[in-house]
Length: 468
Ligand SMILES: *Cc1c(COP(=O)(O)O)cnc(C)c1O
Image (cartoon, rainbow, N blue to C red; front, side, top):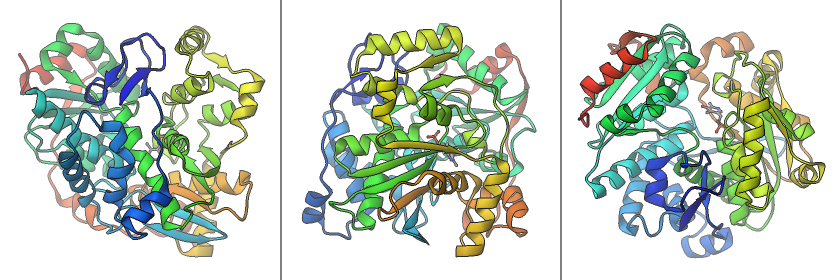
């Protein structure tokens, strides 16, 4: 499989290069040159209806990595990635009643859905780097979930050092502890005296600094990395399989930020999964919901909400959908984003919007709506939803089209990660899972640094094992 850029100018690459490169050199995102097909019916015939998540994962992803990864190595890497999950079925389905089901994506080491992709991506990085005899330094900015999932994915790996920048005293204590209590020689936490935006700006500036980037072999594992999207395709097929929807449609509702998670659902559909409807759920940072309503994508300021991992200004992965919507015309996409960069706004024509809305709907929930969904769901089903998942459940309630088609809501975080919102909604604390039980007793390791590029660069240079 080869990969092409959504802006049509960068060279086509193999999987291994796409994995390590992230963003294409023309500013676009890599997508597979063609969509492989996958039949759940054939899968069940070969492996039976009770095949494991890892078995399905290998089959779904194989066409995307073939040629870059050896088959036995891939099987071993996939198995090891999902052995880190505390639930035997990796992604269990929970019946909420009313033909609605949760697909619980949060049983990984850091209790958020990003583990599903990053546990695999960390191991693939190590594999690809070992093959090349290279090493990299990953530098990432986080406001919470991504940092801990990335740290857990690469801790103790030979070929990767990771430096995670978080805004000093501006993350939740629990989220900070999930990062800073990890003890590994290749893991470094930096608390920047500034905001999350400052952290992001520092990372961008380091990437733009050729000298620095080359000297530490800087790399990223951000949400535009194709390998992350690829790993997320699997659970759409998995959910349909668990519900016995082999040749019948399923609907999905997805709490959405950067659009990576729900775009993976689109990929599953292109591979042959029968999807009746996609529901995109936003919080008050609703650039996506506005886009699906009007065809116009316009930047506004970010407001903090109870679902912080969806507090985004731009949904970077939407570019991949726009590429498909423009019949894979990279020039048209490049033009679209040039306009967007200039004016902060861009629209698609009504014909394209109409085509999109044949399967896509979107809805938004503010903080109050979100708490109400948590409260009502708990009262009716005894299930405690985290605030992100609640946005998905509430969005599905607002715009669901087919009562007779099972609605799968992707549950993206364990409620214990957001105790304050849960307490406000239901008046008691969520149950604490084993992964967090002792986190309050562990020592924290992080360095507080000023919001200053040279200082942070010097810190990283001095500690990166690949620094030269
Ligand atoms: C990252 C994240 C999201 C948003 O996922 P995208 O792929 O950015 O759309 C939703 N919920 C949780 C808990 C997350 O960590």
